[in-house]
Length: 193
Image (cartoon, rainbow, N blue to C red; front, side, top):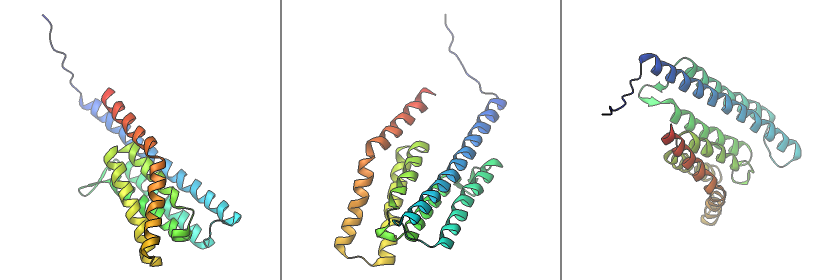
């Protein structure tokens, strides 16, 4: 006669898992800070090379806000907080990424900016951390933010809007298989344990 195996998680086991999860979230925020620092360095290089245009004070403010955002979320996770009121922190910092990247696009010239491919960074993070729903939600937010920015600041005609959306379709389409692959690998990893 065989008996079913019953796994009972102890309170300590849950604490260890929660600690690991919080450490991972803090590490993600450190990574965000490093990515924003790298983006700033690349932006400065682009400004010096002449293919990006922004003011130096704006660039410094951008760096402080973007890295400060990552440090703030990292600090909150480091204190064991994973929710703000009823909202999980992850969607909040992902939304802040959309806003920060859109701000960078605005600073660097709006629709004429070469900065819009940075939207791929937060879409990739969403694919890795959340899965298919996160990928789709962040991609939709990115498109809405980019198109909204251009409509508000430039008043483009219909042909310019079609070209703008086409630019995003090509960019996201070019990396679609990689992003879908990330989601599938994460799904398989969750199943395996």
